Length: 484
Image: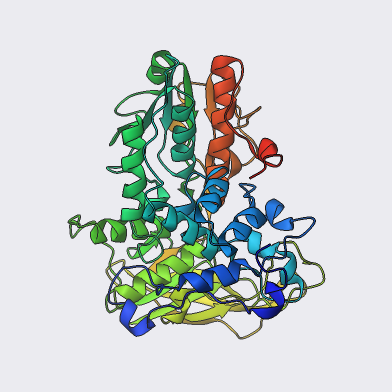
């Protein structure tokens, strides 16, 4: 490594953020510039472990010690080559990945982990700054055509890989622009959309075709795609939201989180929202039900719309600050954490069970009846006597996860085998219908962007083998043996 004792000399440092009182007035990314020399120092904290657990922590199998070594020595070209060997879109993951690699970092056993996510973003941006990210159309075409349904991270990763293999790739997207939840789910303050557009321009220059506003089952059918293309890949996500089954859940002012986030992202993009379709938190008492990232994104968005109050409710008990013995390293830590959205203003409340939404005389939500819980252990609770109360609520966002892919239009044409959760059941990324594949949340269930990219890459290789009998596309297994 560039500095073998770097982890002893340097403390963990990451970019600072803009003042919360200032940044809620816009939807720009929140992080401040960070000196390149400090990024090199942070990379030198990597211990180049004999067994790099960060590899297993990263769904993509990124060769983290290798690119850390290159950055610490200022060899950006080598760092870029290493990172792009396993990750098509490090400019996305370097911004929005929750960094399971850092949880698996050996240094994190008794010190703050290496700042892997920041280093990854720095490499990605350096690759554009140095002009090393250029369109590279394939030298030849195989004559095979592949349709990809869905332009989220799984679909885009698969499109990039299949196009690289020489196949003609067409991506069908139900929305007006590409990106899936990258564009219409993740707020701009976490991922500005020019980052997506920059990458899409390269994919199009390389030969990937996009068809927008194409809903399968309405504008075309899966059967037609199946006849027209040599293979079809379904990357439709897991977008059927999980409803909250309590009385009053039909009242006006209660919305699924993704409907709210998508509207605001369109507003930031300059799209005019019809008044009858708009969801705006300005001057309202907002309740966010669900303690995950999506709920946190609703908090940050409501702050930028200047809600009167924001409360985030979670029925689980408040996590501890330290790992529990049943949650050892290198597992993902189930410990207390706060997001940038919480820093901007939010009351967080744990251990409450939602009982009933209360209506006003016009059918609008005006409150939520809750009761406090007493947890006996991690899976058992009782309701605390005399703890019931009504929280004021003009607007409620349901962010408690997703049930399954919205595949009704697909199963109408084909009898797909599904798992018990309603996801596509696969064998080497192929459904039970020969030539139809799936990747990302549609087969995995709701998960991380980094998993979607990984699945898209692996599915692309499987499709290439299906079409050609063999493949030169990389896989996670093969990347373990590559040297740089």
